[in-house]
Length: 382
Image (cartoon, rainbow, N blue to C red; front, side):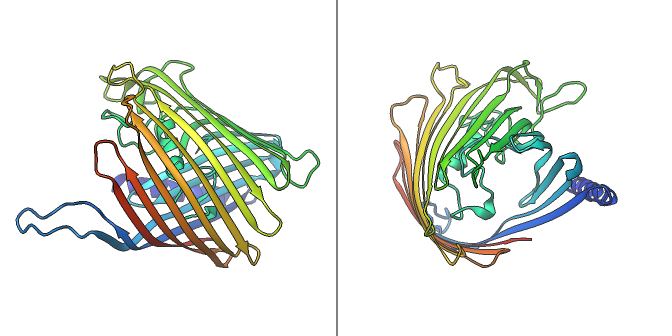
């Protein structure tokens, strides 16, 4: 509770400082919230109450305040300076974005702080603009596994990177005299650990207390749009750390991870949009000293979205698959999804999404699972 109170007090002080300087700078405040209603979800758990032998309910239905966020965006355009501080209130309070940016020209923008890392096109899409309620499985996994989250049992198991890392980034675009950006790029050097995880020793104690110079996350994303209706993109992340010392000052860790993806987007004048993506990743930390890759994964997707009434109403369908293998076992598992959705914006600040998702999971040496979900998402952006 004290941490929460301190965090909220810090936000209030920071906001007050920005407001006090309003004569010299602009301040925009944005709030957004997402409310889920899981209408019906299958729940194949096979669990029973030991004393009564009552089977657990085989479906889930309920409500979820999925997220509530507040963003402060101060700026001093006359000096080409911009900043963003974003906090999310869910089961706990998390600091998501915290960066300052210097933007002298469109082709060169410098970012310093905590921000999203280069990744798939869907990871870099904000939640309010997603075609479906949830991202593809690959996009949900790739950032955590490109950063410090571990698939094996160890000190880093269960970490949530929140799609972000602390570091220095460069972004820019070039329109080549056209009405659209022909080239967009994003490169970044970061800690490689995830949001709110720092590196430091005596002067600034961190999540990791020792780390060799040059052992960082190196990421890049490039998008090319030679024509207004077609865009090709891709990303590559490399995260290497040798013999880091964990905050317990007893555990030594290595990170050796790569991920990449490529995507193609086609837009038509009559509101039809089609997207395809393929990506792969490897975790080779060798925590278990087996001289094998700890985890290999890949995923691909294809989706079609048709917009009506200036995209206020959208009909969408998507197929995505995720495949993984542990310790080069030779027995890969996979998870396949079909998602069908309807999106409606009664006003620009509100969106309703109704999705029907079918999920089939085939895991080596375990029972195959099928899951069907009907859920509704109500979003507000102010």
